[in-house]
Length: 277
Length: 117
Image (cartoon, rainbow over all chains, first blue to last red; front, side, top):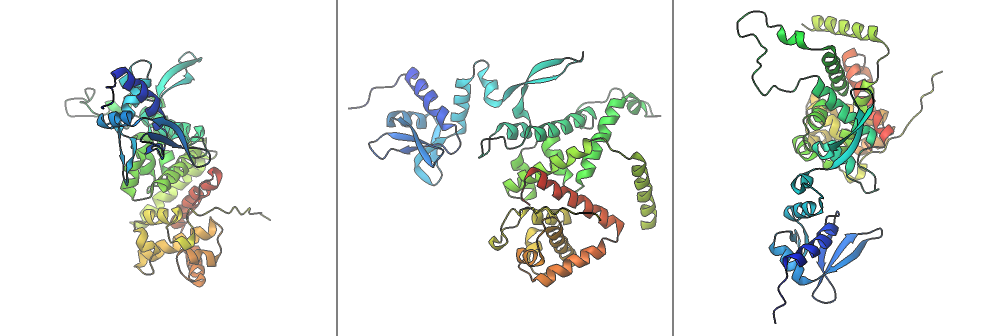
């Protein structure tokens, strides 16, 4: 006797119940020790915990829809696929499901043009730092602190403000005829120049060998995996180094006490340069 | 008399495990050599200098003694001691000193945020 055919409504209701729990880290659908059903196992406070029971018929339906797939190394157990996680994110969204699938929307208060505070909806998933800040680590807190997140965002703000990202179109302000090409430098306001100075100082403090990691992750929004692959470091080391760099470069945003000393140092560098050549 | 407060920083891997710690990976990257060369027993002048810098930083920043520093590289404590003395001598060069001070300051920040080196 074949089991009764499942309706779309039933499948969607069961999928909402099961896939939502399956989104947790290390959660999996394992064959139940008693009977032919499946048990959803998730990491609890002390070891793995049985969360809920799922009938084999639904598990087979989910597998056929590509929402779950056998885990590598354990063909009996199932984990959530990208398609499944996309479906449940869309199903849980209140409005605009496809946008909600890729965004982490939060409210943030920023200073408005008239000096008051205004509240804006921002997407924290656009930068890897936002993702790290929202994602909770093993101790339940974010992987980076709010202070570190704001430090990275501030570096990006200065990068954007300094207008040093590559131009993607034709520069129509540049004169067509040959001659003095000074139009660009004259249009830079003091805000832009100050941002550029802060940005350069922050990267210079970190040093030439490591500033590229900071630059890629904070300004070009490269994921940590890409940075890890490029450097050949283990992921947790890359992550710790990034935390270290952000903390260190934030110290450079603090106002300096002794400008004359800096002039002296640059003079010293020139003299060294002369001696070198 | 100036008082120095010694802050001991943890290493990100145990010396006996043989896995490279973060400080070793960083020095290898900054000196432009591979981590295998850094943890090996031989190499050219560049590799040797990088190894000595790593040993010196582990002694100065992490507060390890010579025997512990040597154990991280599977070398004798006298080798570690020689490395630290050599780097101290090289710090007479202001350019080298500036670079090393910058790296030291960066690594010391790890103590503030609780990151293992």
